[in-house]
Length: 114
Length: 113
Image (cartoon, rainbow over all chains, first blue to last red; front, top):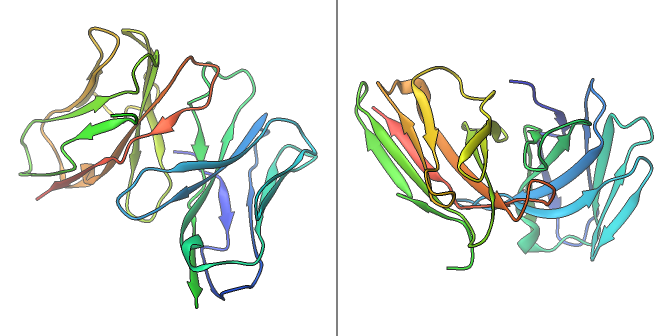
């Protein structure tokens, strides 16, 4: 099925560094979401973006909804060991029948070295 | 419990067998979603329910897959004649209504040998 193009696939960083990942699509989305998934767990919502151009923060996380509605990025500042995990972007298309019907990216695996 | 609960956590079955995966949504949540997550991939939408009815089953890969939610709460995903390619984590999510964000369960890891 269709998936969003998420990059990078993996990142290895030192504790304290900033991280940036992004997601692009050939289709327009009216909502972008960013999730984190730990091993053996389901995805947990980090940030939701509902308006083109919107920039939203949640603690050390900042995400933006691209003005073209075809892309989004997530930044994590001053990374800490518990940031380790897999980050997914997800998009919801306009005219969709339900909020929960999402298209996900392939994920970015983040490793933080102390 | 407070969250979405999925059972079993792990299921190993032989090729050709029938399996049922169960999802207990958060109490009071009317919308329920099933996703499949293959190794190294993001979740892929399978089906969602509004109440007892399947509102959108466009993601079900073929007619071996079927899901029910007879009383508008617990849902069961049923897979007939399992194939090795069905091996994946099956995630369930629920939301208060179809216009609110959904919460995911921990998933059921299905392995077909």
